[in-house]
Length: 507
Ligand code: UN1
Image (cartoon, rainbow, N blue to C red; front, side, top):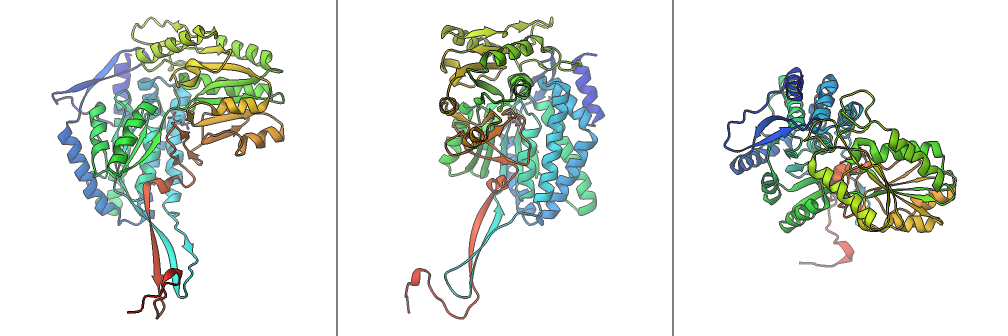
């Protein structure tokens, strides 16, 4: 069966209809597995985007007054749809963006997990009560939703990144509008359809939901820009490159909107003399080669203590040369395709740059599968003499730079001396090294791990990074606050009017 037919049959199994490409402008949906085009999809017009925004504003006016635990009920039903269709949804991801089967399934599991979290959260949108300096007064905090939340997502987590933004935004009382990557619109259509089914079931039991509460606009960059520019969209959550985030962040700030930015990572791990080497090699292999190096949390830099350098590099090279690269739909494959030709060329460019400054490269070459438009590459491991050149940038491909160090402070400085600050890890059994890395003198990243790699975070923690990664947080912990506004309320239940700071003003 061709992938185009397989995708159509998967979509029909989960009862998802493709929008008809009747509009004047279309864009192709294709699969990196074979490079073949699956179908054409209609581009939303700017008029359709404005309509979606207006409907989203109207939907918010209704939804904000629905009690939060009731809003959680919608998310509970969405989670049920995901559970019931996990296998097919995971496979849709695998076909459309080339994730190996287990990772496609894992992405849907991540969506289910965030639904469970959001359902609980819908009963826990707490504010504080604060001691006041005045008698018979009370200060409290009240958290309110913001309005329509624009969600702009990348191809590499084509359903999950939207989910963890949308479900938290929705339980908080916001409406949402999604602009998915044009490279993964079919996954987006399927995920959106699961939400629509949950909304239908919700309405059967609870009465009508406002039209436009959860909407999606397909297309290219200008569609995302329309959301970014609209003063009716108070929060934009954008995931993608630092270059994209710089544009979005500045434009949203210009209109005093808020943004949640999840941008580039250039994640490192440090291997100390006491590291458990079996764990280290497995963790580094998954973090650097998993998802074909196309996670924002992918391990890109490895600093290895000189005493274990030869052992680690020898073992990693063995893993790199034995790992199965090929169709993500086949059993045993661990590394699927790069998303497209551009990604392959960026990888080759980074490798050439590394070589030019003295890097020694293992792997990195194209792996032929007979399909000209599919881009498979053997992951590259590059021993570097210094941290420079391509090592300072994020190349969204499986390239791991390895560097030798001799004292921990030097490795920590290397970890921190790039402009990105998403995730980091240390492999050690030494308590001082562990605590130093976790301390203020340690890693400057948003995620700092011990004896696990930098990728594959659970949804329970706050997810995000510092510096050019954008400084925002999504997912668990108290990241929900980013989707709400805080009102501070001071209430006087006494019979006099004492002023704060002892000010007298007697009229
Ligand atoms: C991303 O690559 O955009 O921590 C998100 C991880 C996943 C999320 C990655 N939970 O690797």
